[in-house]
Image (spheres, one colour):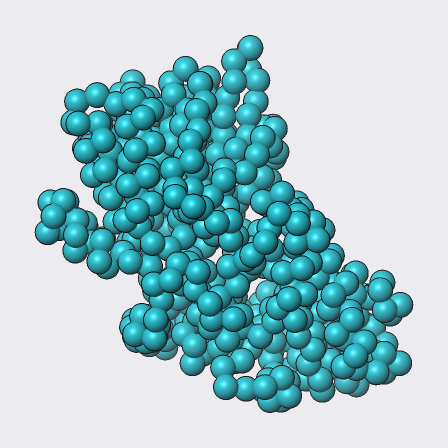
Length: 496
C-alpha cells in the first residue's frame, strides 16, 4: 500500500506535494519521493524514511517547477528494499516520463519477460511499478507514432495498458513538455481522486490517493477518478478525461475502509469515518448474540482505526466506553513492519495501558482486524497485566484467511492466524476469554449503506475470491515461497 499525489499548478509545487505527502504518511513510512518538472527537466529526490526526514531544505530548493508528483511507500513483507525501488520512477523515452503507482500487478513477471523479449525494454529493479511504467511508455510510443503526442494517443496508450496489465493500479504520470496523467485499473481496486483550486483566475489540479490530501492543502474535492478512466491535464491546465477500459466494474478494496484510509477521507463516495461507525453498529449485533452483555463492564478500542467502531458499538449496546490504551504516535504500524521480532517489540513501544481502567473489570477490546494475531495476543496480555478480570475481543472485520495480492502486503496464508482455525481456537491463540468477528456481508453492507451504487467489493483476504481472475493455487504457492524466504532473511537480520 502506498500514497500517491500529483499537482498541476500555476506556481511552485514542491511545498504542496510535500504537505500532501505528510497527509498521506499513514499509507507508507518506508520511503518517500518527489519529482517535479521545470524547463524541460525533471528534478527528483527520493530516500528511505518519513517525509519529514527525507526532505531537507536543499532538496526542496532543487525541486523546482509548477507541476510534480510524489509517493510515500510502505515496505513489502520481510524485505529491505533498495532506494532504487522507491518512487517516483523515470524513463527517458518516449518524451520523458515520471511515474508513481499504488497497487500491485499480478502478472508483472510475465510482463517483464514480454518487455525484454518483444518490447526491447530493460527493467533494472524487481518492482512491478517499473514494469507498469515501461508498459505504459512502450504503448505511448506506439500510439504517438514516435513523433508527436495528443490526447487521443495518450488515452489509446492507457487503453492498451488496461489490456496488458492485470491487478490493482492507481497511477499518476508526468510527460515532459505535455502535462500530467492519472488513471485507475478497470476494477477501481485502489483509490484515486481529483481536486481543484482557483488561483488568480486559473485552475490548479491535484490527483491523490485520498481526499484528505486535497482538502488539507486547500483544494476542493471534485470527484473520484472512475475505474478504468484516465484524466489528462495539459500544460495550460485544461482537463480532459476518457473511459479507457472495456466493461469496467467498480470493485473497491474493502480493507481501505477497515484499516488503511484516514477516517477524514471521502473514498468512492463514502466517508471512511461513517463507514467505521456503521461497522460498529453491525458488530454490536454479533456481540449481543455471542456474549452476555451483563458481563461486559467496559468497551475499549485498540487505537486508532477501531475507535469509531468501538464508540458506536458501545452506544448501541448501552455499554460504558473508555480509552484504556495510549498510543505512541512515533512508532510505525506493526501490521506493515518486516520481521516478526520487530513487530512483537513494536507493540509494547506503541501502546501502553492505563491500569485503573482495567483493574478488576471485564473488558471488551475492539480492533479493526486480526491478521497474524501477534498484536492481538500482546494486547490481551497487556490488558490482563493491567488487572483486567476477563478480556473479550471483537474484530470489526471478518477472519483474514487469504493473502491479498492487490497491493496490501499481507503475510503468507500459513502465517494468518485464522488459517485452519475456528473462532474458538483463534480466541485461545490470542488468549481472550471470547472472540467475536464481523460478518463479511455486514462489513460490505456497512459501506454500501453510505453508497448503494457500490454493488461489490474486493474482499479476497476474507473470502479468497480474486476478481482479476488470474490467481490460482500455483500463484499463491509461489507468493508464499517468495515471501517466506524474504521473511526468513529479515528475521536473520533481526537476530544479527
